Image 1 (cartoon, helix red, strand yellow):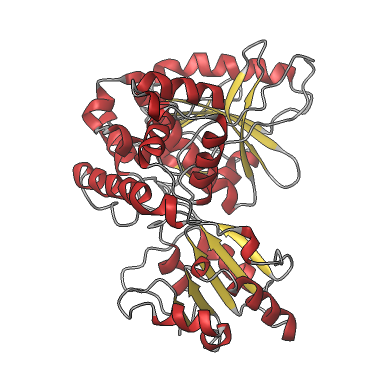
Image 2 (image 1 turned 120 degrees about the horizontal axis):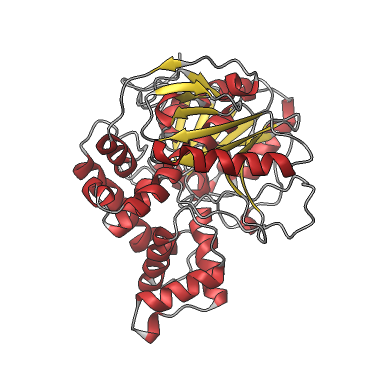
Amino acid sequence: MSLTKQGYIPRLIDQEIERNLKLFGAISIEGPKWCGKTWTALNHCNSVTYLNNTADNFREKHLAEMDINLVLDKDYPQLIDEWQEVPEIWDAIRFKCDQDKQKGKYILTGSSVPVTNKFHHSGAGRICKMNMYTMSLYESNNSSGDVSLRDLFDNNVHNKLLDNIKLEHIADLIVKGGWPEAINLDSRDALKISQSYIEAVLEKDIIQIDGINREKSKMEMLLRSLARNESTISNNNVLIKDIDNITSDRDLLISRNTLADYLNVLDRLHIIKNQNSFMYKIRSRLNVGKIAKRHFVDPSLGCAILNITPEKLMNDLETFGLYFEALCERDLRIYSESIGAKLYHYRENDTGIEVDAIIEIADGEYGAIEIKLGANKEEEAASSLKRFYELAEVKPKFMCIICGLYNAVVRRPDGIYVLPITALKP
């Protein structure tokens, strides 16, 4: 019998977990705090060890620190929750997986990446690393799932009318985010949860992760800059200049080395998840931008940092558009990884040709997607996709425009699909 919690909402990662438990001795599920890692892991386990349990005064953590084998003797599959609290557990589990080659023995969950010198082996071939994110719109029942990524790659999408989507509803989804505890709350209460998340990061996590005493005020300035540059292709120089513009306090200015360290910490805490550049060859020999697109792991975090409410989004359509893009690309990442694909963006510096999202599947085929909040930008998006298509040596399998305000799934005469994000699934 599994330890599934009452009220558990199935996640897209569930099927991948089941598959990997049959292939590997252990799996490691990594992702931000509160995204549902523990509940999902319990859905596949017969026993559990909590290393960060304050209720019993960290008893199991203390046992593990004295003798790791004392906490690795329960029924398989066994969940080791927040394993990074005792990093040596990684090597111990790798060794146990080598002993008898039995599959599906352990599930590790962690909300931060520990200091790497605490363990010696990568675990390759024994421990499968998996990424978990907040809930997509399809998982939180805010997408009808009328169209799947697989359908787009198979050219199996049919025209269909859908319910009208209001701008207020999209704004609400952005501010609430995909946190399991917030999906049934109103946006004001959900915003408070995201703000408490950020406060915990500033007060505790940025120091606890490796014991280095980082300055809260500087990290806060960096988070504000990242929130202002959400969904943009901004290098570190832009962030440094932005922080300089945000504050008049010279003591809060940040050096390149400090910026690199702080960004690394946010990455290890799974707070940020940038979108890498797509590197397919095109006929043009012009320089291709290689800078990642800036993202928080969930757009609600940027809203929390800047205190953005649905009403503020409605009154600032430029910011609304950037955060709508972040919402779509969060879901596209989740859907892509659930089918073994990867998410990128494309930008050619000299000509300015851009594609908001590129999804590449395992065999090298890919789809090109433009994202627009309003349907009035459809022709602009279509023109951008056509320019990209003309230059691409390897043509995309499909081209698509994802809109916020759109009440249909259609295939245009030029072959480009148009659909709302609230109709998409893997």
